[in-house]
Image 1 (cartoon, rainbow, N blue to C red):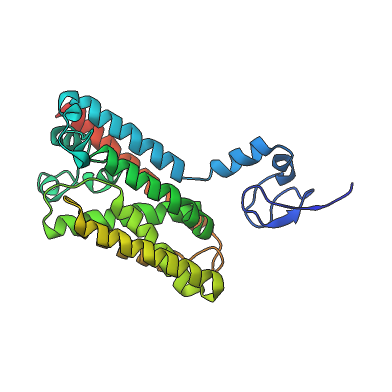
Image 2: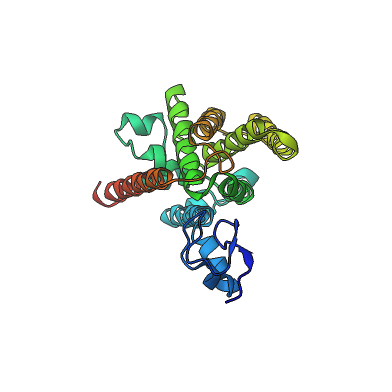
Length: 273
């Protein structure tokens, strides 16, 4: 049988089309997926956490709106258009110092998936759609989810410790992606690394600057997430330095389990209390 080289549909490394298993990422029969563009696209999408997070954020946003439609539809200005009520957000996991004082520890995680207005969620999801695939490509899907989750948690913890009463949004996690990419660019070096470093530094700087101009922005959450992203990138490493290993996947599964437990606690609070 004639053999030829091809990029693996999952990891994009060059392999033989007839190999039974990719030697880099372990995908079985990679040549089978390569024969079908649809299957190749599906195997890549299945490894992405980005789309799942975006869908979940929008579903929770719609849920929050539906819990108090009269307040959500009331026009109070550009920045508050289609804003869920505070009561609705509290029911489904809004975080903050007061939430922690009430014993609602799970909100440190759930609050990252909630948003306070249509502009809020659109702005954050556009950034996630922009940065997420970069981090997944450079760090791997499992490490992306670890960076995203820990950064959101770090931002929520710092903001709560500072005393912010209530807050919602994925901004802390997104600033964590900024931090991870800045770490990558700085430590990789070279033409590509330097270009990444400069570009992300400008974007992150713009994000911090914008946070001080707009009302109601949780800048402490941004800072906590940013530092959390740098820390996780340093601890976990990136693909060119250290390929994703079983340990990374196990940690990602644990992180996913923690997120699910937090949302289960939210459901218990929602239906029982």
